[in-house]
Length: 254
Image (cartoon, rainbow, N blue to C red; front, side):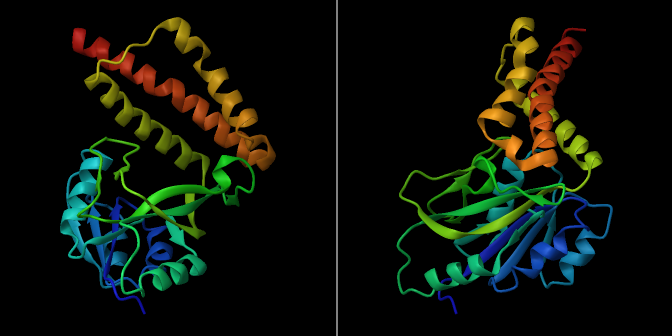
């Protein structure tokens, strides 16, 4: 049994298809805190059935949402998990063993994330095992305020667990398109705020460059059909965020 208390922290929005699998692997934590963005499905109902604490907050970006979430946690150690991510039993055992020590040697830990796309676990390329900081002491680290692709800001030495959790990124093409549009909109807002520039020549080559980098250089051709779809998604997203930026600039000028 671990000696140091851990708050599992999750943000949600219409995650009724995923959230139970996620919560099933978090019941060992000392509390589970949810911040929901006014889901219209059964997400909140499912969360409450797991004896979680659920708060509601309008979504204004991932960084802001997760900062609010961490503030609601009662314990210093935060296990940040997304609603479409599931811990493996081996990782749970490894964390509990580390947290059974009298003194924890690090203030933040990297967890290995395995990419699951359209039902397939990627076994090749950089996505087969991505170390990501998801367990940290909130007195030493915090989430960035970026609207999307937020990270935990922590500059000290980090521990690393050898076992993994699974990220069920998307299960349908419709879900892929929804996420692509959502993330591109959020990133274009960031670009607009930073007055980021783009020219037509650069935009023209973004799709083929991004696709070849993802598919060939990063090894996703080895992941079969799903690797191709992922690479196409990344390439389309690389263009779409700039198209949205251009559209927003035109709207401001009109």
